[in-house]
Length: 454
Image (cartoon, rainbow, N blue to C red; front, side, top):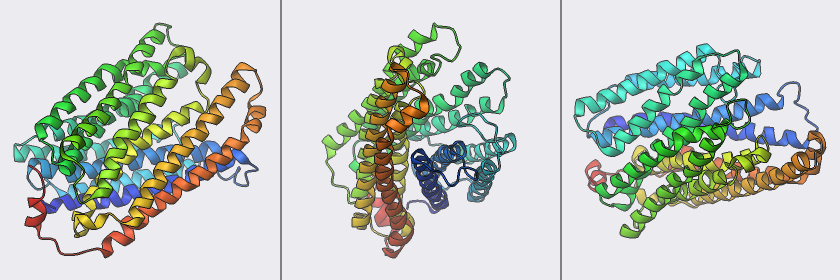
């Protein structure tokens, strides 16, 4: 660890991973409800367990992004963090807001806007946290007078994330208008500015892990940012199909959303470029697994599977079916979950005080492959169930409940592969919380810093 205040990242990673584990619990509860009978239907109905599952995903990934930024910015700017106290206070308020939202959902306290269900007081607390976070990092960079392209792209992605949350504070009486502006937050986060964050973290990790020249990586980063803006902004229109907006959104959404996979293909290409030039010689092989995994899995989940049902002529049949979680699960896992876990895995040796070569543990490798295998199986289960649902319900006109009964076997596969995935998450948490601290050895800061590329 080059700077003492990079340790601020650790409690953020702790909170993020605890919420990740909790998200798995509500995910398994949600999928089990498909099989029925549901003994918790009056205490925890499906809409509540699903809302908690998806909200926990957003909260823990954002917590991971913030922890990654507190780790990366001091190192890139070569200075201590402006105010560790403010960072800890922001984490306390952030955690309190998250817990309040989850408990509130259990008692029906919700704004009712899908993926943005947080009540207004919780949303205002989130805005305050984001302002504290951006001010703290902004002052750190300002004091250092050093801003690299990598951290500039990261900061831009984080700042746009905060700005695009503001439309969610507004309430509309008209459902179509509410849906229209909801995607300004949700789509432009996950298929726009979060791609900038992923690209910046990927560039940082590839520079550190492969030792490739910074200029080469940052040129690729410009390409990714350009593709993100070209495809992501008007690509939002693929959410406007069939929700009551004018028909010109169909060709606009079809064309620009079809360009969105280019971003993820570019990320895979620049990861390949880095590895081809320098090889896989870094001792922290677990971090290499998660970093390359993010580049490859995001190209599959967010790129190819997103393209598969983005065309209006296809989306007409698949809209609102299980084809959507097929794409959503694999896209989120590849693009954002894996990159956060990559940063955590990379930073763990320095945070825990042990050597990087000790990170290739059997538990860590099992955690990686169980999550990758489990997510691939879940994607296939959703795909099979979704195709069956489209044919039975949309083509043959069969009723919803009758269709669900016909495709039950795919939910069994979903439970099995989801359990496999959860076992991988549990092993990752066990490795981080219990095994990594036991490997603590004394590593001279000068020796650790000497291994880092400029």
